[in-house]
Image 1 (cartoon, rainbow, N blue to C red):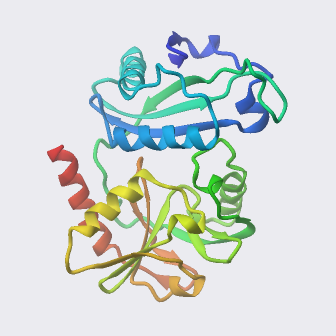
Image 2 (tube, rainbow, N blue to C red; image 1 turned 180 degrees about the vertical axis):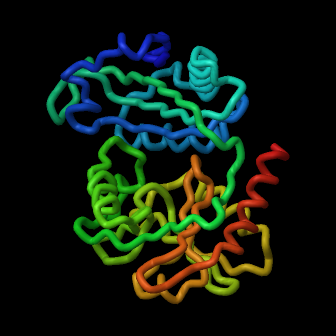
Length: 283
């Protein structure tokens, strides 16, 4: 069952208007959520990121779009799919409805839909002895700016990068901005570990304002023995690192095992993940 503006419908009954602005122009935003036994991980962060993104996109936020309302709609959808007492992946999609060309018509109204699916792991784990080889994706570059940090439906770069990764037997690719700095992976934020120094690209470089990125930075900030900075990462730094890892809400932390001729460990990533899981159990 899919939730369309609060109505639960079988997938076969769900239709998308050909004039839908999310379909025609990418005039839409989304949040990917992990839910375990009815608990939405980091829901407050997801909600406020969505609201901030809608304001940046100049969408008229409906008065009904409170944190409590959207949470209830998510849980209702999970319940309708018998996933309320298990682990699930949820996509909450918001678009500007129908009407207008590039300029939305005055009667275009914001709408939402929620799609859910089962997910295997209730907590975050790191797969042992799993190769995760990456390389740079250099066919297209991300232009830093206010729009580059949004989780919008305009993901052409990620789509093309994913095709490139598959064609070259890579698990993922690292994305560059127009200044040739490494900003993120195709599906998550990037962290670099060198001794007691941890780096992640700043939002100003064009990376996604990731929810898991925020959680990891908060976990790291509690360790007085670490020096954590948000600073630009050049491609030359990658091969000098002790560890590289990718973060997103669904996977948690994914260690990179190889970039070009350099192999990496995952001891630090495991420690951070353990702290993250402990924090989740306590909340």
